[in-house]
Image 1: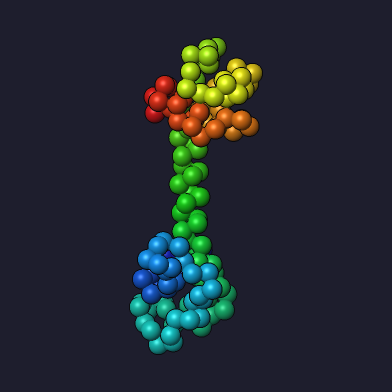
Image 2: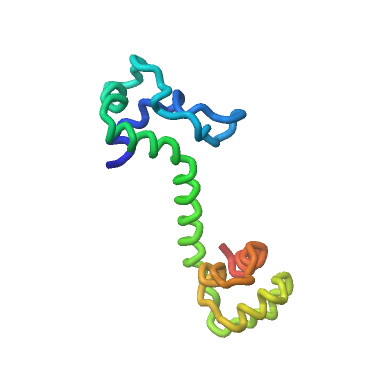
Length: 136
């Protein structure tokens, strides 16, 4: 079931409390801490009283920030797969890439920046250099 179908928007801004005005939820706070009778939408009382839905809503809300971050990372990796490296490219031209990085790139000859990013020994800085060189 999707978050909107469960009515998690009822609790946005109410729960979970944040630490020091950051985007990180307080893991020790639970949806059960939301006062009964606090009605932010029609579904809020039903969510708080049904154990299965209650647990699902609590998990969705508690991990929302982490899930969004992972989705952003997955989207970035998908975009990196779209940046092609020309076949037979001379990686020695990339002076700003670490020596170990150039050696690994020459050895494995990745076809995309996404493949290169998964090679052990290729640093995020090396990937940034390749993105600039090959164009985003």
